[in-house]
Length: 218
Image 1 (cartoon, helix red, strand yellow):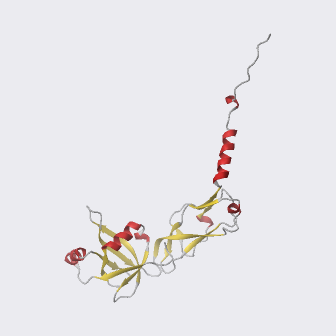
Image 2 (image 1 turned 180 degrees about the horizontal axis):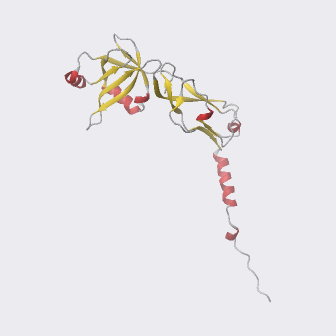
């Protein structure tokens, strides 16, 4: 999710090659490299436990980080590859790419809701469901939106809000081509139950009603 870009603290790795990488792992670190941006590659080490926690949280490769390395200017980076142990599936090396302001990247952007206080559907007791609390967009690294906003001020019960109805920041576009649903307003559970019962009663077939017994002619 965009908004406040998380810091990612790393240490500059003084040695290079397999020997230095193995030593880093023995010291509880994961070796990595920061490349791109018309600057020389920077070998780094990341604390193993912190990195593993972030990887398990998900979306590591689609999160923009503010990398902080002592002795170097902070730089925005995105992960381009995580190499793992083939047996233990634990990280053994990480590649990061420096981003220019014009670089296009995929990020998950949070969804804000506007107009809840005047929405006719919500005033009638409808329930707002965010089908997608975040939406993956292609954005420009130098102009990342903190969020996108959906407007429910005129939404009735049974209506849905799709991505086509959202004004996206300039230079941004969804990664999915189809017009997908972001949120909807459904009927309250009590009203849904009453509607279901009414539907069931309406579905009763005349043939299911017992016929009136006929009396024999005298």
